[in-house]
Image 1 (spheres, rainbow, N blue to C red):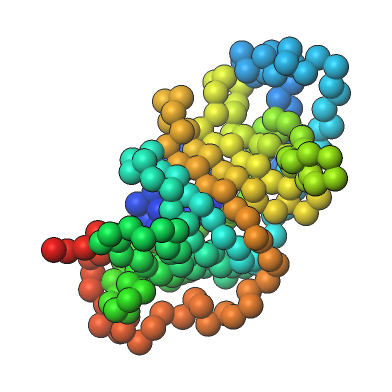
Image 2 (cartoon, rainbow, N blue to C red):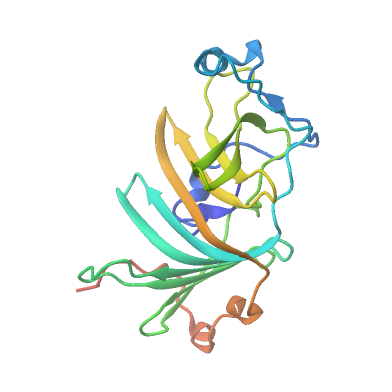
Amino acid sequence: MGSSGVWPQIAPGRTEHQQHQHSASRAPTRAGSSSLGPRSSEHSQTQPLRDPIYPDSSPDAPQQWEGRQVLYQQSSGHNSRALLSYDGINQRVRVLDERKALIPCKRLFEYILLYKDGVMFQIEQATKQCAKISLTEPWDPLDIPQNSTFEDQYSIGGPQEQITVQEWSDRRTARSYETWIGVYTAKDCYPVQETFIRNYTVVLSTRFFDVQLGIKDPSVFTPPSTCQRAQPEKMSENCSW
């Protein structure tokens, strides 16, 4: 799974919903096990003729990549789009808000999250006004946590235009439901979608697309000079008047 509300959205979003922890073991739990509660029996009934392929371990996701994301938060009821630069090696993330439509009085921001330094910079795109906020959550990589439960493997799309993905969750024997579901491509483990659930309700969902390996310009993780005079409070996404 990933760090802080993919991402400022990380800050006010995603970290609030992280429930599962990375384990020392990499042996995946199999969703077909009868000890895993009602969903496992339902899963086997809906696909009685299928013999799912269980991986020997949860695969490793790419450590450095760039792409785009669409994030849905239940608290706001809105989708937000952003460009994303992810550097798992150096534990840093950059999120750049995208304007999907002309929304009156909507401020667009850039977020630079430096987990090794424990800080997040919030920069307004129009004015370069900057806020510097402490990161209270530890780094949590955007990947499949160790000892996750393998749920399914299936194809997205249709004939001549499809890709095979794997679905993982944090479901355990002690409970029949999950609080996190991650969908990753089967071949190279690119992130496709992450969903966080609380009280049987989706509270945060992020879709990833246009993913490219590597960081084209590492300077995107360097805050602008205006951050030398950064304010300590997070700025509102709405206009101040």
